[in-house]
Image (cartoon, rainbow, N blue to C red):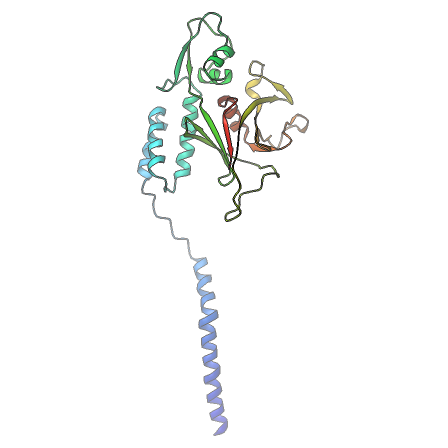
Length: 284
């Protein structure tokens, strides 16, 4: 009889212990495992997608000025959109297509070439650069004709080098213009860490634009300039923007600054055409 009572008590004790062990430890682990194995819950549809699609339809139709206006409205009015980054990228592409082409827009000035004008003098008189005038007017050479009309896009650029966003953000007339992904940071600039100590902003300006072709420095009048890689030298230490050479580049012809911030060759080519000496730069 004693043995039977002891057996009943043991079952009750160990059974209760096992039940609580299962409830407190085993069951949560099983539920977590099932939750991880379950298919992800699809994200809710972006409510502003129809508006964004209208912007993209204008772009596909080649109505770039209308697409630009629509994309600016979208970006300004939908700061919480899940596709905001995509919209900014599309806006940047539209902006450069308009800016670096002969598309006439209200903000572009018109210059009538006079006797004695050369492209460098026209650029100096109009706060522009020869490269920008050539791109904006689809010129194949530097020769100008008396009476020729040149479009002059406004080049009031400033750039922000953002550690947090890992991008170079370009503004024109204090309004977003385009952003470029940073491929590589110099070791002298600490990476952004969420919750880390804030880094003081540094300000400076563009001091020089440099173009390289096969390891030799070239200028916009040189043959092959359109194939050159570009640097944007700034007064902030270690922040020269340069084109990261492709993996298959000849190491004997690669050009890199002592330290700087690497972008794609296409990015630096666009910046080299648009930016002017003296444009403000901020590292944040």
